[in-house]
Image (cartoon, rainbow, N blue to C red):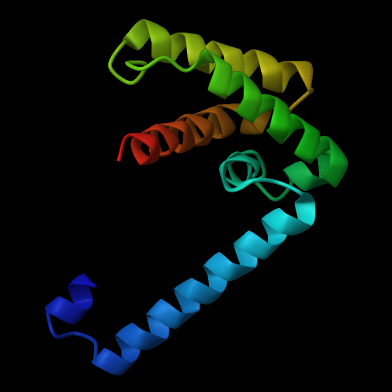
Length: 130
């Protein structure tokens, strides 16, 4: 949108980009329905499968089960002020790390997965507050 406001792209290009974004969102929503995941679960599924190589380690059923367990544990362990309290954030990170280790998540992708999950959790919390 900044490119549009700065006169670098036309109305037609903005509309084209918006349509492409809408198509991507629809495809992700359909993928979530196919996997039987809610929108919030799909966000964590995407966080866990961000490195495509992860799909070589797990079957889709295993990834879905891991995603559901992760989402449920995050839901149970979230506190109102977890974003402001470093101890609460650290506790959530440890919980995610233990869960990934228990499911034998590849160590080379674990730190990125934890960071992405925490970012998703922050957005999840922000959306609930709004």
